[in-house]
Amino acid sequence: MIEKLSKKKKLIIGVTAGVLVAGWAGYYTYIQQKPAVVMDHSAHQMGGSSVMAMGDTVTLDAKARQLAGVQTAQTVMKDLNKDIKTTGKIAMNESGRTYITSRVEGRIDQLYVSADGETIGQGQAIASVYSPTYIAAQEEYLLAAQSVEKLKGAGKDVVQINNRLLEAARRKLQLLGVSDEAVSQLEQTGQANDHMTIYAQFGGTVLEKLLLPGAYIMPGEKLYSLSDLSTVWMYADIYEKDLAGVQVGQPVTVTSGAYPGEVFNGQVTFINPIVDDSSRTVKVRVAMGNPGGRLKPNLFVNAAISVPLGEKLVVPESSLIDTGDRKVVYVVQGEDTFVKRDVVIGQEADGYIQILSGLAPSDVVVTAATFLIDSQTQLGSGGSMAGMKM
Image 1 (cartoon, rainbow, N blue to C red):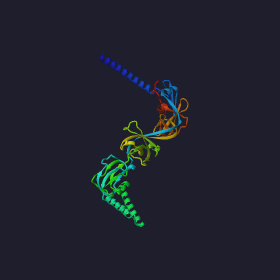
Image 2 (image 1 turned 90 degrees about the vertical axis):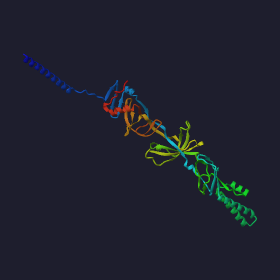
Image 3 (image 1 turned 135 degrees about the vertical axis):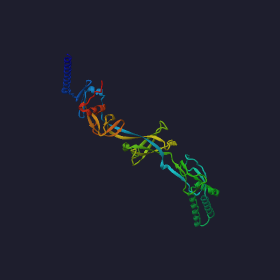
């Protein structure tokens, strides 16, 4: 009896296992043989709107254009002015740098300008020097003057010789830097001075005092280093992409954080012929007036150069797609069709881009949603605007 039940149980289990295996096998066969659903996206629907992309042409119905926010603008001829903005640094005007030198041999007993940064005017007394050379030149002049006076009734040849000697003595004093007024005073007093006053041959700001009182000097020795800071130079760095628009003689406006709201004017006087290899910039020199000495050397400033480009065919900057290899825009052809067009561009200014070739006046281009439209051509027949919602 027990053996019959055991056989019956084994039979039931075997039948059940067979049914399960057969069921799974049938399901697997069904799945493998089920035909795939084919979706054609070349003209797909999105929220009731239609988008179709074929090659470089994209078609959007009215609702798709509204959802995408498509905007357009017409190419126009426009006068462009490009503003090149950069930073700069004030420097000394090198053409205004000078040295005040001595014309006599002697000992400096007193300096009347004693500190760097002081201003010296042309003709200003700057030092008192004890000079045997100066004393000898004065005595020579006095002797010549006495000879002229004593022998004025002599023969014509003697008078001419004495006059020449007097003129030569006067010329010698002038070469030493003695003024005509000082020579006239010497004639009146008939007494040679022990000390000679040295006057500045040039005016400017003292950059360096080169000697101290008590120093012995020789002709040609430097006493002061000066710079005329009534004019200064400003050096600015211009990137190579902007270099073509910068010319000698162009006006430049300069501002500084040291003087908020104030504008200083200058003019381009020199463009360095060599491009800096590390920064890819070119040094431009700007000459500037410096009333009151407010623009101090080594002061950092901001500079702007306005470059008139003339009348050019332009499109808004937002219409251009720059892929690196190509520069393209989308041209409107019909109410709902947009075609990709390769263009060659020039300068960028005032929110516009100059078109050198690829477009004609009165062409209409897409200015908003250009990247979204371009994505449809990239996706091709599988493109989708499913991310857009009403």
